[in-house]
Image (cartoon, rainbow, N blue to C red):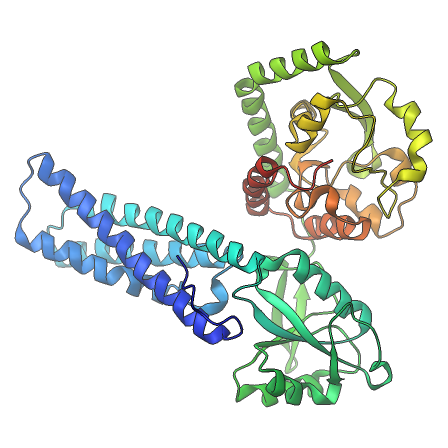
Length: 474
C-alpha cells in the first residue's frame, strides 16, 4: 500500500507520500460509509431527497478536514503511540457534534442516519484503515525502510542504550547513523555507530549527514544555554530535536512543564498505587479473569488431559512466587516439564543463557513435547487466571519473580514489587525470553511508573499478536 519507489533516506519525501495515502484513505472510508448508509435506505424503500445526497457527499469532503483540525495529519502523530487514533477519534466526534448542533440551531431536518450511522461508520472504518496502514509501515521499517536518520549526542552508555532500543524496536522509525561525544572520548567504540564529532560539531554533522533528527541524551555538558543554541542551529534545516531528561521511564500524564519564576520546570506527579484507579483495575481484572475462565473451560480441560496422557505426572504445576509488597503466593501453571525438573535444574546451571538472576535455556531438555508447544504460545500460563481471580495477580503487570530471584534484587529492582505481578506485561510484548535481564527490569519499572488502564488494554491487545506468532518464548 505504501509507495515502493520512495527513496530510503529521503524521509521528507516518504512522509509526504504517507500522509497523502492517509488523506486519500480517510476520504474513501467516509465515501464508503456514505454510500453504505444511502444504499441501505434506498434498498429499504426510503425516499431520499436530492438535498440529502448533496449533504452526504458534503460530509465526505468535510471528513478529512475535520480529521486535519483534530491533528490526524501531523507527522509526529503517525506511526506509533495512541496520539494518531486519539486525533482521528476527536476529529470524528467533533464533526458529529458540529453537524448535530448546526442542525438544531438552524432547525434543519437532517436525516438522523447521517449522525447516527454514516459518521460513526466512517469513524470505525478510518480507525481500522489507520491501524492497517500502521502495521504496513511497521513491516517496512522492520526491513530498514522508511527510517529517520538520527544523530545521538551524549556519553557512551546512554548512546549504546539508545542504539540497542532502536535496533530492537525498529517500528519507532529511528536509526542512529552517527554520534557526537565529549572531546575526550572521540575514539570510543559504539557498536558500529561512527563517532562523527564532538558536542560542538553537532550542527555541522547534521548538515553533512543530512540527518532528520538529533537525540540529546542526558549529559551535564549540555546545559540549557547550550541546548538553546543547538536548537537555533537546527531551525534552518527543520531538523527535529529530541531531549532525553535525566529522569528516565516516566512519561505520559505524570509529566508536565510548568513555568515557575520565569523558568520552565518539569513537574512529575507521583504514581497512583491506591484509590479509585486501582479499584477499577482490580474490578476489571477479576471480571475479565472470571469471564475468560468460563469461556476457556473446555479448552483448559482438553490441555490438562493432553498433558496427563503424554507424560507422567500431574497436569498442573504449582510454584511459590513473590507478589505485591513482597508477599508470597502459589502460582499455578500447566506443567510443561518433566516431574523432577527442579532437581535436574542443579545439573544445568552451567548452561544458563540468561545474563541476570533468571535461569533460561533456549533448548531446555526438561521440557516435554507438549510443553514446548504450550510455552511457545503461552498456553501454559492460562491457569494463572485463577491467581488473578483470587487477587494475587493482575492481567497486566511485572513478571512474577521467584523468591531466590527477589533475594538478589537491588534497591531499584525491588520497585517492581509495589504492584501486583501480571500474566502479561511490557516484557511479554517486547521480546519475552529474548530480553536481557537489564531490559526486562527496565520494562517492568517503566510499567510500574506509568501504569494505567489504557496502557493495560494496549498491552493486552499487543499480547494477542505476540503469542500467536510464538516469538521469543522458550
